[in-house]
Image 1 (cartoon, rainbow, N blue to C red):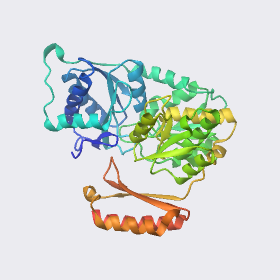
Image 2: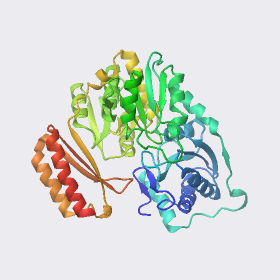
Image 3: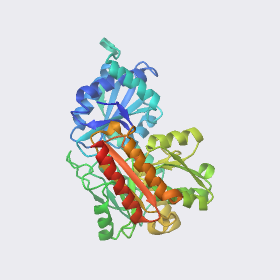
Image 4: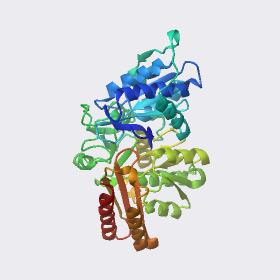
Length: 444
């Protein structure tokens, strides 16, 4: 493995880059952080539907118990559910085994503290140092932890979600794409309890079909289903349901930037958006900035990653932020991105205003934005590559102040992500493709 923790925990191809042996040692290494809070910490573990989740859960659980923690296994459940249930049940922390939107052969481990927030970089670095030294503390005798399973705690989480709705959703038809992932166990039940007429697709996980041609990264089948059912909206989750992408009644995508615009401008009108500010990443469309400026608000930008959005929100006291990909954080309601909770807030606004999702989404005009992911074999050489740096500089010179270029490595896969944004979509596509060619030449 390279660096242990990326932008969203540990992640890699299961059984090779992230092996059961790694998971066991990660668990033993993490216990030292949790034991600093209490001598015998209680840790919750949730998993998504990947075929590798059983193996990694068993290994992580063994590592945590051998380090002196008691473990409560929640079964297949969403990432934000674990974050919520840590707080509701007074646990000392939690872990989720998931690779979110990545293909099924990947898996990952991310940790939460007793407050339900993801662990910060400093804590992850401390855990990694123990992992690298391969010398976690040895626990013997009665100090060893125990594990048990309780898959019924999901009901507590659904109760909490229902309580965040400002309106019942009776009269609304919604199609829910569960991505064959963890949302399958939660999202349909939640929206039906709120009174919505819910149609569900991609809700038959088999261990290998998570995120395959479905979910927030492939919403085409959701778009069709919304039209086929004459639905008012569609909601597409990813594998662990910490994000959501919308589809309006006309089958058009409503991305995370548009969802933040709809929710943020509604909160400005209600007087509930703190400092009239939303926190987004450098990948967000310039249309988001324009929409908030017109409403007397502003957008603060961070580096890519929902954890960095949340860090800025907590530091400055903001209560709404997120990413174009659909990670949306309502910090008054949750400690992490929550795709189901976000869907509830979005549909509640539709119900309260009586406006269709298409009209609400038009509050933000998206500038053409071309996004290209290029798989490379020499990702580690990206930062110091002069050829790529020159190509980026040339592209920026061509666009001037009427567009922008972002080229960055993925934090979870061996990819270079290229984004070009400007008023002329043809020009954006041409510049993006020229950058792809340079990246391939320099890093393959």
